Picture (cartoon, rainbow, N blue to C red):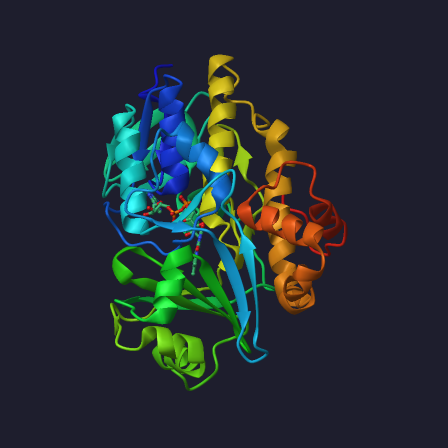
Length: 396
Ligand SMILES: Cc1cc2nc3c(=O)[nH]c(=O)nc-3n(C[C@H](O)[C@H](O)[C@H](O)COP(=O)(O)OP(=O)(O)OC[C@H]3O[C@@H](n4cnc5c(N)ncnc54)[C@H](O)[C@@H]3O)c2cc1C
């Protein structure tokens, strides 16, 4: 049977662009289909340093137009406590405008020989014994393999009803951009480029410095939205209640109306099958408190691309168990972050451990390593303890 392509990638975000570029680097014929059109807005601006090895494989410089991120500061204003964790070290991390970052990844895929189409949503997929058939924007394509990188749309997971909501983490987020910020606090924020995580009674707030004096601010709410309050009013109420944010935002403009994202944590119980794999958010999504989304998307997509290349080279791509050798590595990454986020919500990790971390340099280093994305070294004692003590189902 003749195929139009070796691989079709649905979704041109970080996961899809990574998989497509690496497969093209291996010499495969790749078609990348994106529903929208770059540059397009996307939330999720704070990166982790252990993404950098994948960025290097893609041949990109991600410092351009971005703010260097030294680390993360966790703050409880009511208790007057805060703790800084250094993240950039061997690898560096950045705070990025996702519209530019994602557009750069997409252009880079094209530069590596990936055939790209925008405004081209994939509407149907049939994974047969001889080929994958994909319908998108009135055209039908045939390929040897499909990578589902459709983000939270989770094309395959929704189609096959294999998504499972995680109810125990944050429920929804409200966010906007502000700028320009000025003054002593702003100077301090930009001197280090840290992300701030501020603890509040209904969840937490993020503050991320972006280029040109703009900041991304978001509120993640743990419970259901309080009745009778609009999202905009709830957001404003929590910004106004924070002395630090009130000072930081003095004189800054809100750059667009508050956006929201609801019910955001889920697992995809069937990450791969005959001739397909789901990567990035399409494989599962965790509450963003530790900024793990893009990092898991990049590393997971790179792992999938390496395995698909091997499958194609050996003509074993129709094997539904092609990705099984990577299950343990995938689970270690996802489950570590899952357990970490779960502890944040269920055992007051910040007050009991993070704010006390100055007492034990070893613990502080172990936490910094996890927050940086160093999940597969096998040398982090705190990771092992945390995974042993977890009480949620393991990822598939
Ligand atoms: C409130 C919030 C805050 C976050 N903060 C952070 C953060 O600070 N740091 C971090 O690392 N992560 C953060 N994230 C998570 C991060 O944004 C995602 O994990 C990341 O974008 C995943 O990349 P992806 O490529 O899997 O999906 P996406 O980036 O969502 O890309 C998927 C692409 O697929 C396209 N698509 C969808 N359906 C189709 C279709 N049928 N056909 C073709 N194309 C399709 C979409 O248009 C999109 O371009 C946050 C998420 C939320 C909700």
